[in-house]
Structures are given as structure tokens and as C-alpha cells.
Length: 510
Image: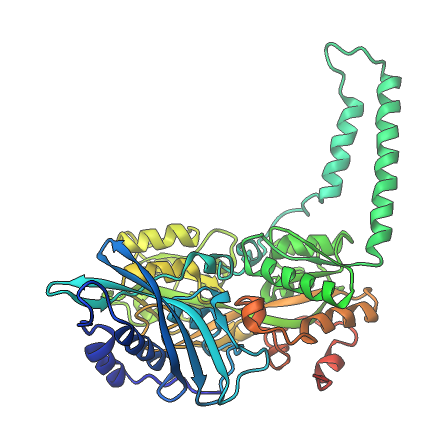
């Protein structure tokens, strides 16, 4: 792996002489040479000198900015890799962070390979850079949020799938049970202006139930010849991965149906109800379901099996750059947002606080908001820090970092945290605007899971879809691009599906 070395002294020199250097080009807007130089400095500050070099650069228009006054410059560039680099690695710059550095959408970067790039490879980009105009008609590069088209690729990794199970007294009714209850209510109800006799009402309801039975039976029969995958909310990374697999299946002539869902807990239910054969589930949720802990108390899922670990969901502890908080111990006496009640973010935050000997009583205030609300509170100075578990880079945090200097706090592993499913992860420098140094943190992992009774040929079909495609990362999206055999065992805490480990041990033919 290429080490992303960005010493503070070198970075400070870049900031002093490049990134914040007044561009004294054309009076009305930055010239192409100046923009090219600044973008090369951005690349070097993130990846290190001698990794990626701009070979050709062409300005492609611009538009005015009003707040602050300035100019958004568009460009097309061709870059050459001077050293081997793999943009699918978990702890290196991925397709989304590279695109963000260059002001491009994730699909505005070309030439990335699913198995890593080699020295001499050419990478193309349709990018942009924002500049503020200073007195004397000098131009200063602005930290910028990713273009809107990135929003679909870097939302928190299935926010609903990050929900950690919580204790409950009895299992919740399934969707099928609720539907049956509604049908039964039709038999019992007697409207005040009823014109049908009880026997007539019963006959109608019986006919509809029998018709529904035949329809459900037919759908289940069709599903026997179809890979049914439970994904996640339609704006999250789980849905992105499910859609990517559906595209691969279509090209391979394999029938695959990707279901939208609320995330991990809902996906466990879909598996248990026989409505899906495969599902995307956060690793700590899978472990809790398998063992019957937390929300799954009394309803253990011992048939749950793992096919592979897919991508990381980084735990991020974020403060304002001017905050006195430098380490997790400094959270004592501070106002901290831990994430929504029942969310993976909150569960991870509580586990990390406990592992570091910090109780909730030691905090001045603990709140529980979604990431959007929490970032707004941090920006307004109403909280001192926030925890979030999200596939990096998160669009919400990218947008905030472009407006407000932030700092990420290192989070180190302990035996208890490892046993709970968190693995060490490194966020490279420049994952976010103004982030000058790499961050050592922890991550949950997204798993592909199934049940023990799903036939091995079908699990091998799914594994083939996961690892048998060499689609370029830019076509896959940020999360899907990080699926790789070398990380397929990370964070797996439940038994393996039949044949899965043997498949992963087999050298790919491509």
C-alpha cells in the first residue's frame, strides 16, 4: 500500500505558498496555468509528492460565485500515476475522496481499476475549483463541498442499517402478521350502515385471502429461481451496492431482485421471513442477531451466515478546529452528540466512551440527533463534539468542512472494541477539506449475509457477483468500489456460509 505521508511542515509550506497563495493571473478570473498549479498542490498534499502528476490541463469555462465573491472554474485534465496506487483500499484515498479533491463528481474521474492502478496509468477528470477574489484582484482557492452528483454515493452507509438492536420484551410482529391482522379485522368489523350480512362479508374476505395466497405462492415460486437481496434505504450505500450487484447480475444473465428496506434490522427480518435469501447487514447487528442479544433478545438467529465483508463504516469523532478537545479523554465535561437513539452511531459512541472509562454522567450534556442536525448544532456552537458512524467521506461532513474548519479526533482500538466488531481504520489526509493529517479511527463493516439453508450454488452465485467483476471503481460508486477479496474477512463475527471461505481462498481467474 502506498503510504500517504503529509508531514505538517511540508503541508504548512504548501498552504503558505500554494493552496492559499493569491493567484495573480488574469484580472477577471484565474488563468489555466494558475489553476493547474493549485490542483497539483492539492493532489500532492493528499497523496504525497511523486504519486499523481497532471500531464495535460484545459480550462472548460467558469461561472461567478456570490458568497464570497469569486469564480468557479471548470477544467478537464489528464493525470499520470508515477507510482502504483489502489483507490479501492479501505485506508487510502478512494474514488469519492479523489473526486472531492478535484472538484469532480464520482463519475467524473476515469481510468481507475478495480484491482488497483499501476505506475504509468492515465487518469482523466472533469473537475472544478472555487476561488475567492481578494483586494488587488488576487484569487484564493476555497475549500469546497463535493458537487451535487456525489450526494447519491456518499450518504451515511444505510442510516437505517446502522441501527444497533435494543432490548425489547417480545418480538415485533412481522409485516405478514400485520397484514393478517388487518384481514381479520375485516371479518370482525360491522359498519353502522352495513348492507351485507356477516356471511356475505366472510365470503368476500375468504375469496380475497385465497387469491392473495395464490399470488404469494406464485411469487415465492418465482423467487426460487431468483437471487433476492435485501439492500437498504434508497439514498444510502447499501442501496448503491445492491443496485451495482443487480447491474452485474443482468450482464451475467442471472435473475436478481434488489429490495429496498430500512436497513440492517429490517434485513434480518426479511431473511427470517423467507422474503430474501441475501442481505446487507452491519457486522455488529449481525453478531447481535446471531447471539440473540439486545433487540434480538429471545429471538436469536442462529442460522445467520456470512458471505463476505464489503466496506468500512468509519466511526468519526468531530470537533471544531478551534476546540480545546484533542483526545477522547477531553470529552469529559463537554456537550457531545452521540447519534440517534438506537442507531449504530450511538451504540459505537457508547462503546468507545466506555472503553475509555468515560460515563455519560461525565459529559456536560449528551444529545441524540441525526448527522444533519448534529452538524448544524456543531456549527452553531451548541455542542462541542459529535460522533457518527458513516462510510467516508460523508457528504454532510464534506459540506460542513468546506464552510467551517473541523478536526477529527483519533480513536484507538481496545480488546473490548475489537470483540464488539470494530476494526482499526485510517482516514487519509484530505479525506475532508482542511484535514491536514491522517486520522486513526475505528470502523464497523458492512456484511453480505445469508441463511444456513440457502443452497451453496446460490451463495456461490452471489459471491461470483461480488468478486467476479472487474468493473472500474468510478462506475461502481464509493462503497461498491471498495469490495475486494483481501478485505472480505474483516470484522466477520458470525459463522461462514457453506463454501464462502473456500471461494475467497480461490485465486480469481481474471
